[in-house]
Length: 568
Picture 1 (spheres, rainbow, N blue to C red):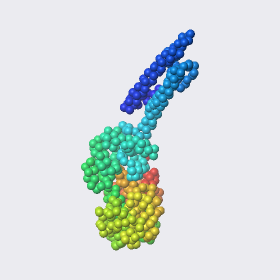
Picture 2 (cartoon, one colour):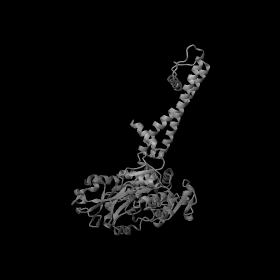
Picture 3 (spheres, rainbow, N blue to C red):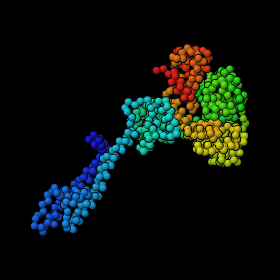
Picture 4 (tube, helix red, strand yellow):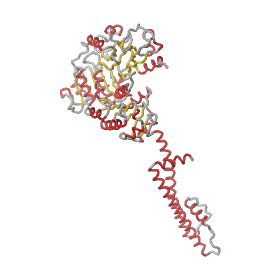
């Protein structure tokens, strides 16, 4: 009874359901008319057959309805039959019309009143159109792509609630089956954003096309004036428009990717490049290639005398915490922590190294390739770009037209002398192919590659890339950093700087005594007390009780630290 009541309620609320109910009642009325007409005709034909009999016909009206229903439903018990051809023809008409009617009525009834409501209920449970009234502090995503996928993984990892708004029900159900929290609704419908509590969200992130992002921003801003809105932009001209639409921060991921790729290129300098800041504390990267640091350990290089601390190293794309016995190789990128003056002191000692007159080689002249070229120029590095198509935005003297798969084209671009090859195409298969090819041509060259999908980062390293920048991870990190998280800063893929109140178990202990790095993999890079930050504190000085501790480490290292030291 409860199931029937729920199904009837569903049909009453739905316009389509009400239309189907009217159609069902019409069909039942037609059936009732047919049964009545056939029952009347049954009596007339039986009376006609009995006209020569001595005994009159004694069939009641109930018998007429009984015969009609048994014949129409194809049961045909055979206890009442016609003897004449007219009666038999009439029986066939009743049988065929009943069969045809049942083939329509029964499937319709089953599908519309049982199967369809059940499917609708299942779909509504998997892809709702609203969030509970009390929902707050969640992240709203409006487009599913590689960046959003990586962002969802980070939100889940750090315990942030999120919801993905999807317009198409089939797509929503497919994403739900993949474990993604979805809500069905239109991106340009204010009522939809009200139903998902956009006014109480922590962040709205949209990574679709520029026009769609603009529409989303205007719609959300109309009902949530103060909620942060993060948007990506492909066209530089769209940045101002998106900001006018109400976007809090516009991310040009292609430009960011180009800058990241250029920062990893050797050939311009061995100076520091800042990648993160926490108050007065700066986190920077510096290439060790072709400097006196190569071939020695950190203890032997004595970089602490310059005031900076090497908190870790990137070795062919893999981050490792740095210790006194960490060996510096030609492929090492140092991760440094220090004040602005300390980093300047480092630069004064290493500015003369790692200078090459040969231009870097960029494969791919798209948006990322052009952004890489502009970033290299800022770093004082000459470049050449290889692309199949003419690129009017590039300096024609630096553009080599042709396929990077052809040796003659690469030789014209300077593959024999270049210190660095930067592969920027959006297709990971092409990037893997070109990485293997360039590594075969130049075993000693530095290869920096872009990866669109996170899963291909390891494959590109196996193919021979020294450094790989994930487009999806970079975009996800950029959005995640803008979430209101004053205690955590992502400075690179998989590398965090975070701060917290001094744990009770560390108070008055020295950094050496606590063995934080050995136990967790995190490095203490600063102590903040009364608004004053002690950068790279003395490891033999006791940690003050009423201070904040600032650390750097991988996501796994951060998790181990919090498990050990986070207070209940």
